[in-house]
Image (cartoon, rainbow, N blue to C red; front, top):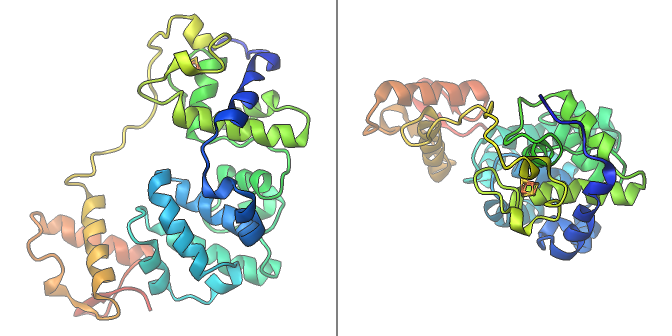
Length: 298
Ligand code: SF4
């Protein structure tokens, strides 16, 4: 049975902790916003969805150097976009980002929209990214809830070891905790994410360093094992994802040349898995075939 929400005051140390300890990340610097505006925030959020910060930083800079605006990216070819995405993983995000750039250019005159509903209507943008752009690019007041925030809320407020299945309730709970002031609300959103990323981590929360230790419901209860409903991610080694990654790496290395089908991973230990990988890349629009060869989309 979840515990009742903690009173807002008990969360207030979070903001001052964030102001004194937040990591210096490119998308938090004023000059980043001056140079790339909401487009820079949008691209960074796409990349950060499933990739660690340290891998995102160099790719983000390269991406924005090449395509500093949605209109610039809208003219890129799919092959260029897949190439530039490089090793960030989950490459369908590159296609969605490309589509979103085209949509922003066509529907919004090249300006990333500010309204959550308009952001949600763009390709590849869900609840988290839409609100993150509205808050961190435009300074509006919305609850922004990512995996890290969900874990902090589950522990500090609800007394559970791990968050449950994502639901609208996460947004409602975060909304109930947000300070009224617009700027303070934006900082609070960022602070909750930062705490989950650096202190209240999934496997080894460092409660001795936590600004919420005095009020955390889970810590007060003795950090009980309350179960874990999260879906386990399958191991990468030996997975279809690994096969897809290997095929795509080959196509990127050979581009603009096409790769004869018989030369696509002939040594792969599971040929059925390799063929599934090829078929799924074609189905996702990440590769094309002409019957005898495979290549990046033109
Ligand atoms: S006290 Fe521990 S469990 Fe509670 S929010 Fe802080 S780090 Fe997480």
